[in-house]
Length: 346
Ligand SMILES: Cc1cc2nc3c(=O)[nH]c(=O)nc-3n(C[C@H](O)[C@H](O)[C@H](O)COP(=O)(O)OP(=O)(O)OC[C@H]3O[C@@H](n4cnc5c(N)ncnc54)[C@H](O)[C@@H]3O)c2cc1C
Image (cartoon, rainbow, N blue to C red; front, top):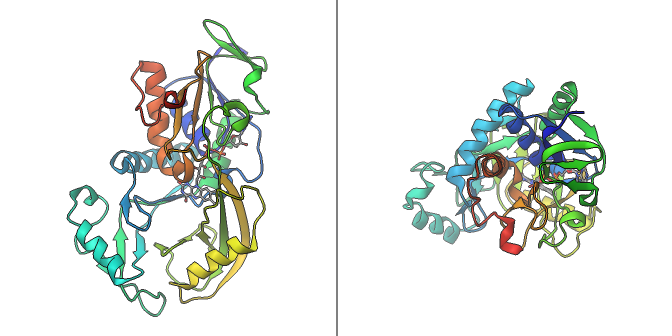
């Protein structure tokens, strides 16, 4: 095989997004992935939510991440000839009057303007939803079908002979002045998009975060919105719904737990009047980081070896902007944002 521009290790959402951005820029690419059960991308609900948490905080860099995510996934849909991006309003249920009042104070903050229109507090149909204090409607978010993205991206890459199944370790990489060699593939650069990769990048402060999510059947009739009230309730393409997710950094194993399931079902029952039937219970470990910022950039010792990871619970919204950012760093020498540069830990 002749020398490639890029060797990408890992085909979760980050590796897939990066691969297609590089191909679109005319680069030659090989993606090597060793499929593992319970990877974060396999279980992700794929929700893009610009206003999150108890305090309705505007997501970090929402003005950059969300428009780019929408633009990019729409473009990728055309390339992969499938539907990936669903633009859906997110209805955030207020739990109390103080909760609603907190928002009333915040709504003058003009930074929220692209995501929350004036007069966005309303009540969802009481027949279906328990929301005595109303809900806040958040725009410019939605859901990406991550499972389809990975499946169709892999098929595309296989068709152009740019995909291989293999386990790659950093120890397999030989770095020369002008290129790298790894398992007999020669490339100008190698980028690890291996998610939570403590084996190869264990010197970085990954903080693994277990998440449990349910796929449930429900008679709730509306399939054109996501409702969030302590947990999310989100329609999926197969007529089911995602409900979740839990956050657990103490007990980080791949076992689904009764406690996790009960937590999600309790939260659902606090706002959804319809009964649900659990069809599937999934677990994944998010590639989170101590300071809740991604880990992007060059290996401290090896030239031409890069990492693009650490996107925690927001990989789907962050990946399009941050992969582009890494490409501009490598190709054009543009500086990385200090908040994401893994140099902050080396
Ligand atoms: C329950 C749950 C719900 C979530 N919901 C959302 C959500 O709604 N919205 C959102 O934005 N994010 C969500 N996330 C987070 C999101 O899933 C992650 O941010 C994102 O998937 C991380 O993608 P990644 O490509 O970095 O890593 P991964 O998904 O872990 O992919 C890494 C890939 O690299 C491969 N790999 C690893 N090591 C090697 C190796 N040595 N050699 C070869 N291949 C290797 C793995 O097999 C895998 O295919 C959720 C996560 C969980 C757990």
